[in-house]
Image (cartoon, rainbow, N blue to C red):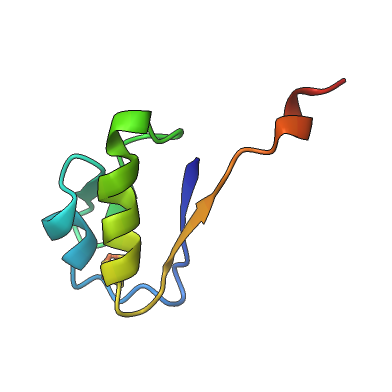
Length: 71
Ligand code: SF4
């Protein structure tokens, strides 16, 4: 699972990194930066909680496609 932040929706108030500090860092302007390119299994629950609590619906979670590894 990968995290995508919609920069046009995100208002940078930081609920995501307050809820899931092990998943998100913040930049100098207060916008979130995911710690991972690929979310570890142990962080899935926290990532989903951050997504559910984002008031701007700016966090998109993209599940890996099994076909992506096929030649
Ligand atoms: S909670 Fe949502 S809108 Fe707020 S900083 Fe995080 S991603 Fe952006």
